[in-house]
Length: 336
Image 1: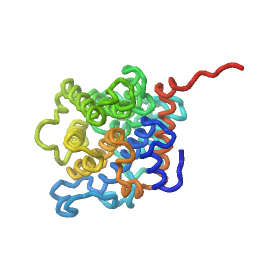
Image 2 (image 1 turned 120 degrees about the horizontal axis):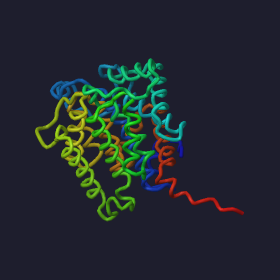
Image 3 (image 1 turned 30 degrees about the horizontal axis):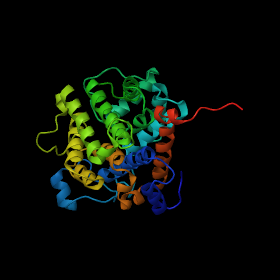
Image 4 (image 1 turned 180 degrees about the vertical axis):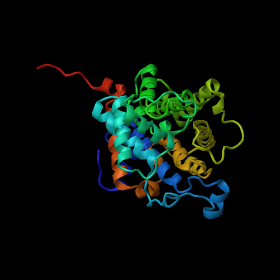
């Protein structure tokens, strides 16, 4: 579905068009990832005090930041997700070799930003041909999590073991760490629960609405904390979060559960500073799935790089179409 004109496009999504709720929320998740990345990139590596001194409150896509971005330009969070999505659509599944090749091509194209762990993992793949980095206690960064949305979409409706295996296949190209795995898998499960929660899936009763869906997301976050206490988010406000996955998700969970709409959640998390493009991207994909595309401020979506916005729309639908959930809905061919 490609609709000319952003206003027409957003109205189509808000009214439901000829698509179902899950498809529209998948689009919300992908656009949420991109706008969160672009919004947060401006204040990445700034402290909350520095953000207040310069912007009072940062709330618009203006570019700039330490990367000197154009207005609406995204960083590695979105472009790595799109690279992973292209590899999945080409291979027909989440495949470690295909993902590693896609990441290698992405790095060869000289992206605007790249994390040290990601760079090291891709370099190791080029030397060894092995798409799985050795397990490393120091690889508990957020780089695998920031790009995980394509896995959440293409495995929607798969059994839990299959979802976890797909997560490891893409993550371990650069981040082979059990803490990173646990946090990333929880984000995938949260996105999937948000996508399915009000669509009669049985995960959340349709009558529960958005509040019920949010309660399930909190339950998933709490299950992560019970298994890995380092993710505990009920402590003091997480400000200036680092790229350590636990810091990142503590900030994301606090902002998600303390607010009641997409815009407030995203503004809250990026104004915490630190690794703000990634906290923005991860919160954006969860909240985009939870609140839907019509909840994304049009001023943000309008200012996104047009090519990025188009590919987000296309991939959201194409990946979902390959998911077990959608494949199960396709009626079998009948013989003449």
